[in-house]
Image (cartoon, rainbow, N blue to C red; front, top):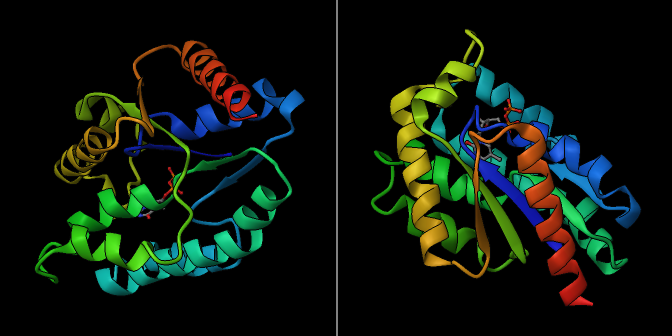
Length: 198
Ligand code: TYD
């Protein structure tokens, strides 16, 4: 079963995913992430840091996804493991729909079309949602170019539209809850769905 965790920067999703490793230890999940599960992540980090060309950056994120699928996600799913990924394709559909806005006529449609033939669609996606102001307050001073409040506001709208379009897959998580409450809610939901999938 493939589970993904999404949300804007400052939503606490990375802390949540780290907590899941412990909370689900008896299920022996594979905990992974995008970007950075393979060496391609280093190229992505460099592209983010240089804030160069949005299309170059996007294609590197997609290359990172391809390598992640080939080397981590598909083998783990084939072995019957539960895979939990901190960010996944929905991050592209939400973030790059914003960064490519002035470069392509329909970035969201293009992003979906590029992924569709080769991606693995998650069975369950948790979307951590909180007011953009609260997220920005949580971020450190040194921000990546995605982390402007206006960008994050648009990104979160895109995430919410994705969730609305696919309510079977998405579960919304109140990211203002204390971390241990978020964690037990998400861990219980994964156990429930994993039990049902057997
Ligand atoms: P991430 O490593 O999750 O951020 P953090 O620094 O909080 O650990 O992701 C780095 C940045 O890349 C983050 O601002 C979100 C952005 N991103 C995209 O724009 N598109 C994508 O497809 C992914 C996976 C991340």
